[in-house]
Length: 601
Image 1 (tube, one colour):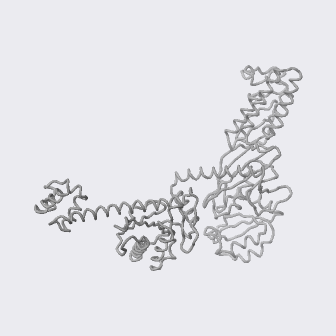
Image 2 (cartoon, rainbow, N blue to C red):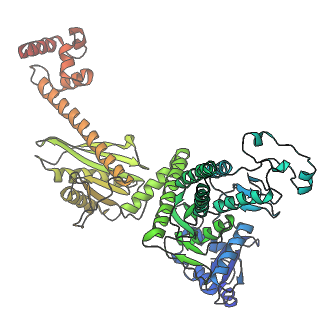
Image 3 (cartoon, rainbow, N blue to C red):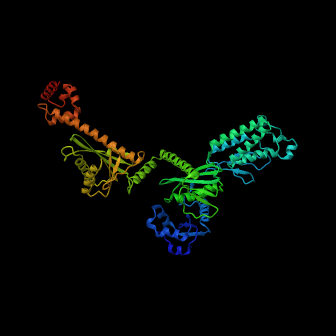
């Protein structure tokens, strides 16, 4: 808890919307937040301390002073919070991880305005369109404009006086048809401005306005029998239609909206933005945010929306979002959560984009930092399996026998979601007679965890039993006998449909077949089965070998063990020379062994 008296501070804070600021003992601003009721929001940090996560409790302990600013509406608080966070960058506030300067398309304020792209936004009266998150899309738009409309690319001062004086000469761009030669007066400013009007409509997303205008001009040219002019207009119309087909056209009825969606995990969040003008998505961007205080998606999105809208100079009055947000709005701004129709399709498009971006970015992180992937998988397993802790240490049991003969149990161990083969163990069953899988499981589980307890070793967080309810019940019986049934999570996996069973729950849990949690469990089960079968085969082979050699007259158990240790198999004993055998057996035993195998042939 902080050293100052928060009760006295709360008395000074009104029940009004506004922005609050927390300072530490060095008077450094460490956190900025907004609220529609300042006193209630600030008080919740101190009154409900036990409900806060660890990071937020650390923040609260550092608070030494509180400042606040009252505003008229929550929308004002929302915008003020965003501006203050951008200015001061407090340690515990989420910041959009994005320091790029995005390009703009500019129509220069000059005679015969040039149209080009730039990363510098200069307030000189020129018209700027963008910024464009995709440089590639920006160049597609510029290339299409230059194909449709002859524009000058030089930086000459084409004032009427300079043109009248004949200061300039036409260049190669005029010769190849990319420019109409305004530098020598071959094109009037009125004609040039007509082209600019179409360009401005295209950059504003009013593509249908331009296509309708071109269609009207083409029809007029046909009626005047100007077929060459009509063909030129038809070429323009086809190029514009081709560009429009590459754009995401939603609906001409959706005029001017912003669309936001979010995807997050334990540490990061990703926010996608679509700007829709006249039915066309003209801008799209996904930004990354790193969580600081375990913020909710609602909180993160409320921080991202004003920042992104400001960055892209959005004036849209309608914002499409995926869920309710605790923000009061006035008549100038409307939040929409679509359930069906074209706006829902737009939201789905944004959600698809943000999900793909999150997947790709997390794959990049995981390649560079494998521990990030491990943490994510463990967190997902904890969530899927309804555990209270991360399953860093998992053990899986499997039994093997053939009609009750040579019964063995195997245990495999995974640590941080990866096999820890040095910790694998196997058991020769000692107390079970005949084919009894339940009793075999009961013995193996008891012996395993009695030893861990006797040696004061850490127990696993998760135990997986290869089998259904019966094997799970047998394992639980041993855990209860040892008094550790509540210290670990134990589940059974049935092979037929990959059902997961919990003790005392009659209904199994089904995980998505593609889920990483199920894949890890299947890997454990398969590894336990492989390890168990290998040990079982070795035991069976060894016992068969021993029993066969013990039938040789004059060869006792001690000699058989020596043969087993030296030659490993009956086949190698048969193939061994007398000299090799004499290193283990005496002459009489060697002769008896030769006679025994000779009679077997």
